[in-house]
Length: 279
Image 1 (cartoon, one colour):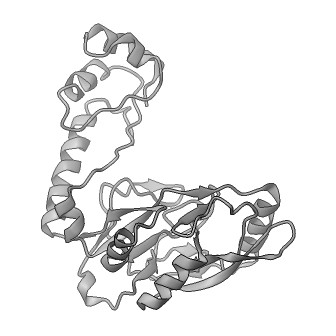
Image 2 (cartoon, rainbow, N blue to C red):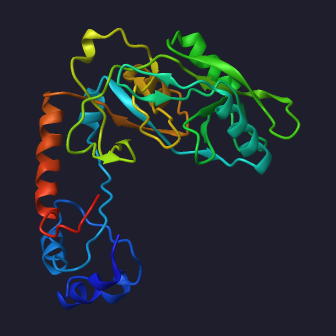
């Protein structure tokens, strides 16, 4: 994200057209020929916010054993839904994990408008919850496939508190081991935040389920995020289901993790030319 004082020096390079600098967001590949002149031109400005988005090859994705779920379909909460969900979360006891984090695991969800959730879809709820609902057909398929680590809960209308007949909450209280912390997990608000991928040491030594939650409250509001096995991704793609993207979980010191560290270290080094730059 650009600060206003960065626009003039960027324009003077001749590489960044005026119309491209009208907004505050500029998309640059970390391997782009424009990144070095961008960093050079803005090194004496008030700094830029970098929000890296990682891309992976098919080979890298196919080689991963676990994935972080990323939401690609969201159902909006009504005010009644939001108030019901907030009351429910407030009624829960925080669970302290092996990572020392305190997390909430909502056991019920309210959402009123569900017509957009088709029979081949999953969806996230609102902006604050890290929870998913699935069409009953998807939930049944998960059960029939024998996936482990999840259960299906009723979903209600936040205003009427009537259960939806064809929508289920995906619930898991299976907790991952602590993730590895590094430069891509900087401190934030008393905890840590995630810039890149989840990294774990010796995943094969743990008895993991197909659906799990992280031991860290990576999301706001003491919410853990979801991790699934490669079986879930394969099934999701085979059945042409919609609503999730899959970010690979990395094995510490594995080949992909070593390349990941190399790319991140190079990016941190380049961005540090201006100490006011931040992620």
